[in-house]
Length: 160
Image (tube, rainbow, N blue to C red; front, side, top):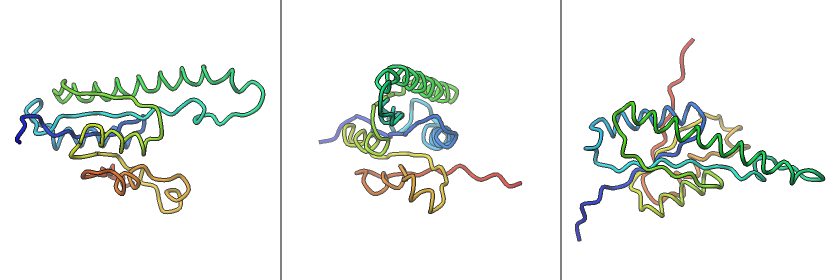
């Protein structure tokens, strides 16, 4: 049965430059026609939990959690606002946004499943093998676990 619904493209956003670059690249290459694009755009930001962001234990740790959570909410609001402004600058105002608490790897793969997305776009930090092994790679995880096409957008390195 054919539907008139546009396929969904999920773009992972965060506060880093590589994320902004990936969003701008995606808008330039897939949404140049503005609202006449082939895809429906969904921006997804993963907000860490206060407990996972701090890792504090001991007396007084519980008192810090509300303050940390408030900071994480402010960061999420700035990330969303910046992404919406980037879209608006490219004449794209019909953008859905989700802020979901959790690990970015799981949040992005879950968003793909929930929205039956056709494409997931993530930026790349450009970590080397050792950093990627220690820190983990959201893009690598998504490339192996998301049930759709995954596009990893790398910001070009500037030559000195």
